[in-house]
Image (cartoon, rainbow, N blue to C red; front, top):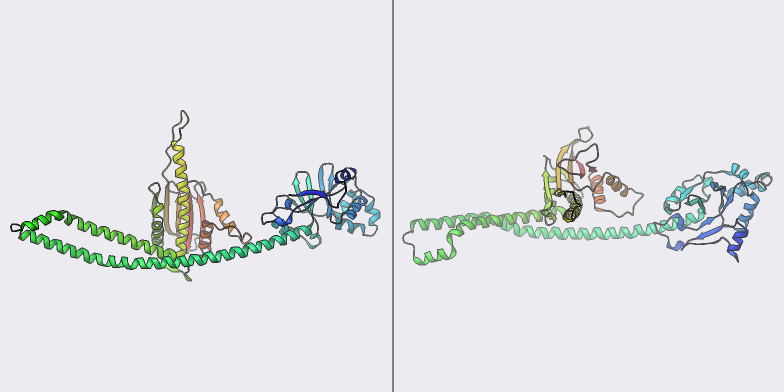
Length: 476
């Protein structure tokens, strides 16, 4: 907890402060508890202000002599803040020729008219890192000047630049340690993800092998079954009158007529299941290809369908998926990373829609006020649109993938927020799934990542959608 005490130890602080109203107070702070979020108000601050027209240079010089750590004095005219004179500036003018005669016995108004400088004033909630970076950008002659910290409309305190600089380098050390730890965690996470990707890729390959056996033999099995059923039909045709009773009883027991109808549909079901299993294993393989070195041509629609297949367990009947695919050629891309982008965006959309659906269901079930008719909420929906387009009129061709939903949550500020999180001056912001998607599209694919809303004048979303994320990838 910050404490307030005189800059130098006094036997009776309160009585001295009343007898000598010009005694400065030092509001101490525990700098051992500094963090990257610490503010200027968490640093040691001096409270020392005088009336500019009723205080002489001699009086202020005496206070400076008694309190060597005091960096300056805050000047006020009545209740109005005027400015600040630092210790070094006062001594500089007193040491000039005839400085003592001109300024020592005169009110500080005279000295301030000569020694006025540009004061650096920060609110008390300003982060230490931000204030230090601005203070270090001052001109060399002002670099050592104290900083004014404004805690209220009429309350200003002084911060020694030396204290700010020490705190700044302490935080830079903490920042470096955080960066080192997060880099280690990121490397460990990437190693685990790569290992998991190789594991899933291997499992998918092992799944595809037996599936290929099933798929390859199904066509033969279907032909064999058809031939056997035709043979049975021929036997029945030519031996209809001479069929032994034992055969007749066995046919009735196995329900031969039902088998003739059910065997083809059973084989078709097995074929459908093998086809879905093959697509799922292929989608897992594509999703796990995150360590590709060079982009390879890929079918974006197959990539989207693979991600939707992986998300099938979350796509309940409450959510309507609408697809409007254009004619797209194979596009050079990192298919695994592009699958990750689609997975991130669709997952965010699903989470938003499911939350909204639950909220709408609760609101709809609650009794409505008298005289009002409850409105039925629109069914949650996701629309996926793809097309080939030209963005800048230069003739360069791009593919566009727009994933939109009808829950009004995303806004256009999200795009600026994502870009801000990727800025180099904020390296320790936790990366979200959309931030990762932004990095993959703009960095790895030299593309564009845009957030759209229905209220934006340049875009009117179709199919009743209210929010969309649109990505553009060059075709070459």
